[in-house]
Image (cartoon, rainbow, N blue to C red; front, top):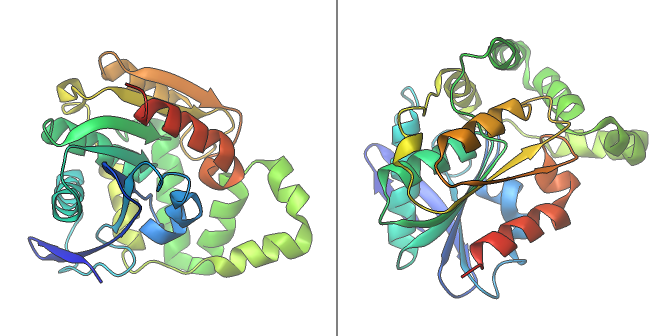
Length: 260
């Protein structure tokens, strides 16, 4: 089980495939496995895929203190250097997009290309704060309540309706609380990378999702505007596009990272 020590954390990661490194960064309440395992084999013919669990998730352990974007970005960088010869491409989803962008800004020699899905620049927006403060309250009320809310707002209505009652019940049963969920939600509220974004020099693709109720397209659009020379694309889906539209998401990522 590969691990790397970063400050007080023992950070777990997995690898698969061959070729240059592709580092995948999960979102809140995710792990390298739950967010990315179903997509990994779409990249392994061309890339060594590295999926980590940052603090608060999966098999990674730490001292339990407050999370910061910088702390998680240091974990991403350390895993990348431990797992594969650089430079690497980095893909981040949701909170992982914020962390991936910070990694690219802080480690310009390490990150070759950057893809950020459903990310944001800061938590000042009133709706953003309302959403994640509600997440915090629901998590305190009990994970089952939080999980139902995240499911109904994470997917499009059409997708959930098509699953049917049994499919929705099965999806809910797959959810299990990550040990640092509350700490990650707190970072969702506090994260502010506006000062870092102008420092990104890697070619960058920003993806937004038109029906996203967790991080509406205004968030990714602002991130795109702050990264000089970045490309932008939107898909007509909800926040959890990596599950709802895996083919379309994968195609956009592959086209970008494999471009010469």
